[in-house]
Length: 494
Image (cartoon, rainbow, N blue to C red; front, side, top):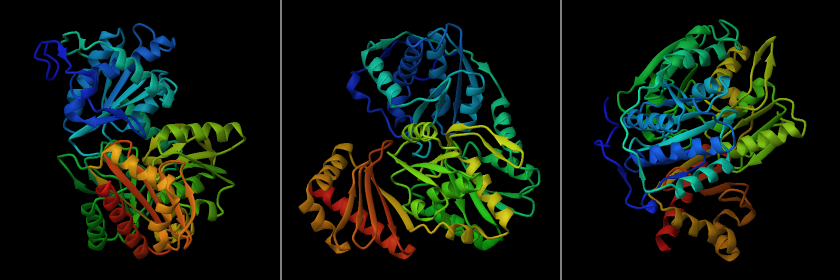
């Protein structure tokens, strides 16, 4: 039997509990591969399983489903996860490489927990674990308990050889595709020509297959052998250029893609212009007939102005908070509740019935549903995506990030911005002063001229993120540059 990666048939030795800089962010555990691959992948998995066992939610011999994305480190980390599951007395089930929502859907259908090995959109030198209970994605309480149990574990774990998990094949991915084929009518996308930017997305082939199954002409573009960190909240300039290049070379109704684990959509219009994620979410919610949308404070303020939704519920950034908001909205009488994040990932809070076809709820971020809803809106109305998007009257938005900013530096800047009115007023005097400060998550400032600048620390990486809104795209770009320069200068001074 082969040994687990990097174990050398020895005990795991940890140099100290505080040396591993892994943490839960907006959705899952994240950190450098060098910090995760080895003892932490094993011990965090063991801590998650312990939480479930302590609650009576996991029995001896129960199956635990494991999936992974396509980054280079994911197979090794998955082996460690399998080993921890087996050592805990459960049965590891290897679902292979598949989208996170496909794994979540399959595990929930089996009423079993799941673990996804993925760093989502972050670079290849980082990775992570995303945990699911049998009833869905873990929440912040679960995260706290996992961290507490992990901290109390010993400094060593047993010497282990690699286990041979149950291998499931393509069943979860097939079930995921069946979900969409059962809701969207056959040939409903007939006549559309769609570019699919495949990059290294684990959903790259699934998207092509689903689109072709619904009648669209799907053209595969940009397949990548190595990992590409597609971030739909801070699109790389290389990706922006590729979208424009493909759109200029041949006619497309839209170009679509996802991030690494297939839970965030990327959508561009016929001109190759990126449609920001919260707008994709809004188009999706409207197409599905939502009376209530649940979304973080970072999503565009146009949601309240567009008039398409009876209620807009704002949350902190992160899928656990959106899920909490969905539960509240349903308890308060929401009939069709759709959640989404600024990255475009859609969480379907309630079942949807449309034209006699049903789509069950799935409260984890999904990329394929919003892609299909946007394309269906094009097909149904016969209008170009740019016109459909304009109907929602969103302010022009832009977002960016300062990389390599320690969490402590971000906290110092944000704390001062929120607490020192004189400091904040002086900085924002160039925008006419401050009309409102929202400290719901980070610091979101609405200036007297109506423009918005929102700073928050990333939960997944050492980054300070900046989101802006303005009347025109050119002004949003200018405002984003100003915001990033401001953040950089203030952090350097501190």
